[in-house]
Length: 321
Image (cartoon, rainbow, N blue to C red; front, side, top):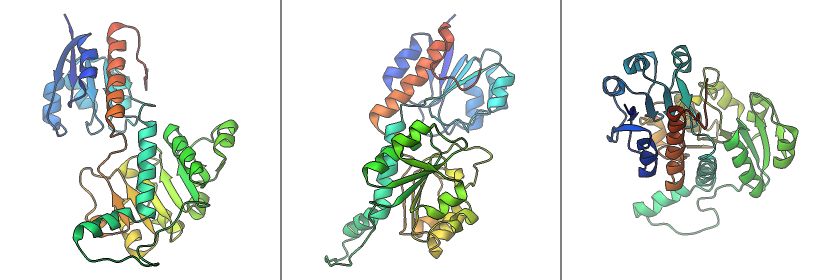
């Protein structure tokens, strides 16, 4: 009997073909996240589930799938949407999609940085508004990046890719992380390790690239924002809940920090309403990996993980097990 594979959202055809080579695929093609009830019903009897970052995979979902479930393939690098201990208790593998979205997310991070520091979103809104404008020496002045300090929180693959781009822009790089990176990596990036409190005080730009865990939830809260320079820019392309959005809105409104660029939000797709009223924050709807090439590569890696588990050759990028 063919293995049953559930895919919770539409994915590229090339990834579907890989999955179809090892089982019968049920594709949930709705454009929104499945409700818990829909997911519980759809997952019953599945041996493999291909999930997206907004699918909450907890013990109830795993129980709804039943004893046949062998692998959850999350189409994301982060897996804060998955209860890993619950999978471990039931002997179910979890896989993710590291590496393939590194450059796309780093590029997007720098796009947000340029939008925030050069006031590009404000300028674009001005043009579209039809309000008359005229060039002069003080018109919509932003700030340059050369000689400024970029503080990176989380020096994984994406953090390192952002550091390389920062060096090309003439920025100094400092970082903090749970573990200090190898000395050869520090030399390559010309990056210095600092504790978080010092990094916040010294950096002109703070860019978040850490996973969402209990220790990083609201890592950037009101106190952390108060430690930053009044001219500093905060970037978040990791997970929304790493930042206390209400505290960030207050800090931007009151001039505690100078600006922000956000790709992720605490309660996606909802956004803290006060942020929508501020000109010194630029926001995009979770586009970090949103290139055709990257999203295809992510889906294909998730599919290869499923194939490896079901045909016995082993997953490509396991998280547990």
